[in-house]
Length: 479
Image (cartoon, rainbow, N blue to C red; front, top):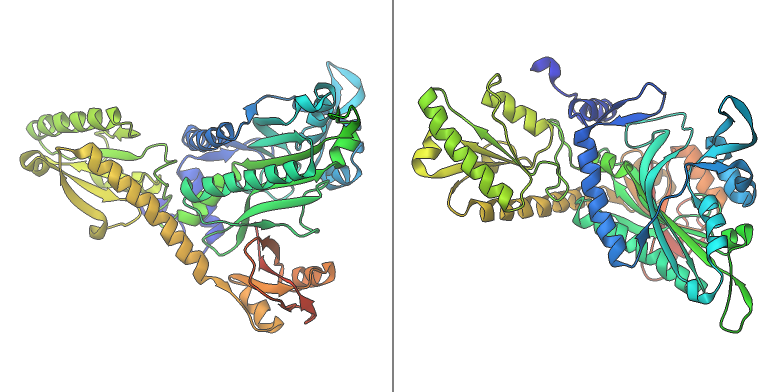
């Protein structure tokens, strides 16, 4: 087992992450550089994330649709800022069916253009608005430096695209969807996130305003975990998305888009994982609890398996995602390590003594060793397991929040600031100038992550230039 041991997070966080994704069978490298194969364990995790998001989208009135992967290249020339932002990442199809195409086709890096074109056909009157559509699928961006889940050429995501009668309504939608993402991150993924606005430099190409949720990873780097963009009329004018208002006057729509991707799986790994492997939040874990039977003789096996089967049936009926590990070619100790590495929140041990006492041992993944183990009666087990899973979910959020808050600093000057962002986040006053932003990036590789909605009273001095500043911003190195 020693050769299979993961590198420690503290010594080599990047290699710990890379090996863990492979060992836990979440994903693998595809034969095309920069692409990934999501394995069944990883896809089930993504399906659970999809379910949590999709339910929230539908609760807020959104419906799902599907748009093509291939987009006429000319569409990307219609919104100048958008094409400039995405042109380095475009993959272009020039031949099809053995012949050169009349017009090259882009493999979608995002769908604003094709959806804008379709909205221009569908929207005619104020009665057609708002249009609230979401799409689940994949996009392709020709990334040079890749990392499984965090940054791959092709990745899976959802992208919402909405059209409205007014900027007020579109802004309301932009903030509403950011709130949905924050609710999902905090309550399902157990990751505390900070909501706010991106700087002009960091905003989405073609947006009037970009908002995001930012999370701190286990190595104290920042990760943009979800974004919600307000386009104003930029795309509506580029694609002629117009409607007749109640006065019979032709108006341009106001549009938004918002997206969250499989990058959230990477966030979950880096926030909660430890040197033993994954730590899954119970709400998302493909397997919430695993039963490990322990026996030596045939007689013990018969008695133990009878109880294990009963426990399995009871927990499955209660809606718990349960697995019975009845492999006989490996030891219970091997199973413990295996399921710990895969991040299963709860292990249920059933041995001969448990059969005699009418009990089982429950071992928490988030608290390894004796401290995380309790013995409970078999009677009423489903309720005890459900309660414990809920406690684990809360504990993971609490731990991640404490870690984040203890690594956010308010440096007194630029020298201290430069030290802070090498191994943490700085929450500092910023004058808003691109020059100060560029200086920080050049000096420290840190960037402005988000200008939080929650701002302190008053004003201060820019941490970089000392000029008057009205906003505080989070600076950090990021993925």
